[in-house]
Length: 255
Image (tube, rainbow, N blue to C red; front, top):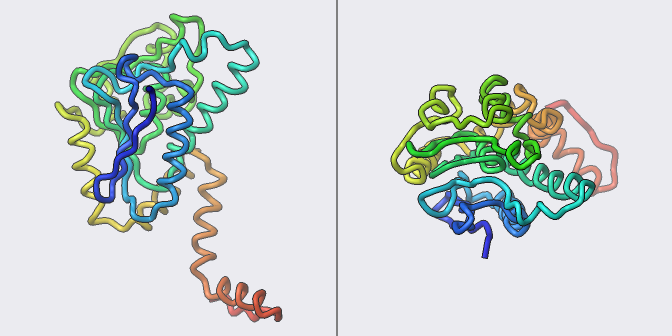
C-alpha cells in the first residue's frame, strides 16, 4: 500500500515516501497521508526538524502516479489533483520547523517539486533531477514553474521542463540547489538535523519566516507571523486579554 510513513528519532520527524514498487510515485493516499503528518508535526513543540526522503535505493520520488490522474477529466484534474497537491506541498514549504530533503535517488516531476519545498537538500551522488511532464502531454503542476525557478533559475528549469534534460547531482550542487552530494543522503540529513539541537527553535522559526518574506514564499503570512509574535510578547497583549476577561477597560502603557 502506498503511503507516507512518519517515524520519530528523538526530536526529528522522518517522512518517507513509501511506494517503492512505483519508484515512490505520488498517489492520492500519499498526498492525504503527507497532509495529515504535516498537520500533526506542526503542532508538536518537541519536534525540532523534519526530514523528507524516499523508500528504497532507486528513487526519492519519480512524480505523480499516472494511474491516479490519467483518467481524470480536465476540470477534476485541475480543480482537485493539481490544487490539492499544491496546497499540501505549500504546507511543507511553509512549515514553521526546519525541513531537510534527503534526495536518496532520482527526483522527477512532483518529486523534484516536493524536494524544492524543503529548506535545505542533500542528494545522493547517483541521483538525477528532471521535469518530464511534457513526455506525457502535461506541464509541471505542483510549483515546478514557480517555486523551482527561484531555486534553480529560469534557464535550468527550461532545460528540464521544455527540453526534457536531466540534471546530475553534481550540477544540482553547483547551482546551489543542494547543500551536499553524499553517498548516504538520509544519514547526512540526520547529521544536519542533529546540529539544530545547539540552536534556538524560536529563533529558527522567526528567521525562516523572515527569509520567506524576502523571497515571496507566503509573504503575507510571514509578515503577520512576525508582527503577531512581537505583539504576543508584549505587556499590552497581557493587559488586553486580562481586561477582556475582567470586563473592564484596558490600560495600555506600550510595553
